[in-house]
Length: 162
Image (cartoon, rainbow, N blue to C red; front, side, top):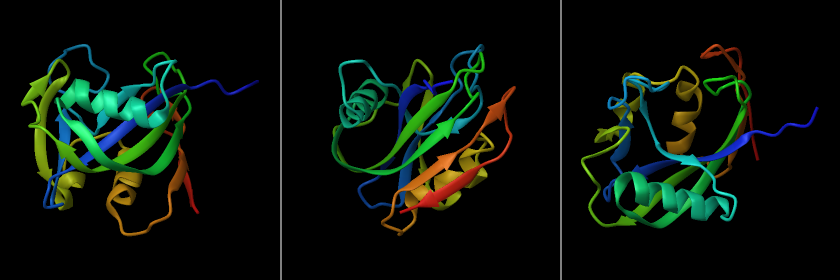
């Protein structure tokens, strides 16, 4: 059976000094699958855009800022991750330069600047703990992960870099 996941972007915006990252604390909607968790910014790719354009659009919509420099850090396949068991495939970016002033919040929650070294102390998806450190490390190679989920729980994960 062909793999037809929902394509998405996930971006981590660094502060100008590179010490903090802009995250969303998903605390605005009671029925949110991500309620209480911290995450990067992003969302579903639209049919008429490439991945970079989708990432820029999502950052502008969610944070009100324009991406001036970003780089693809990796990809993640999340079979079974969606609320109804849908498969997702994400392109993970590090935004290293932006213009504008980020919003304080959006419809999904509060936007917060968090020290990069403190990110793993926050409530997040179990699987995020495996890839978030790779977003910020010094290895220039992209990471490529597979992280199957069932009923909201990560079953396993694997990663390669090249």
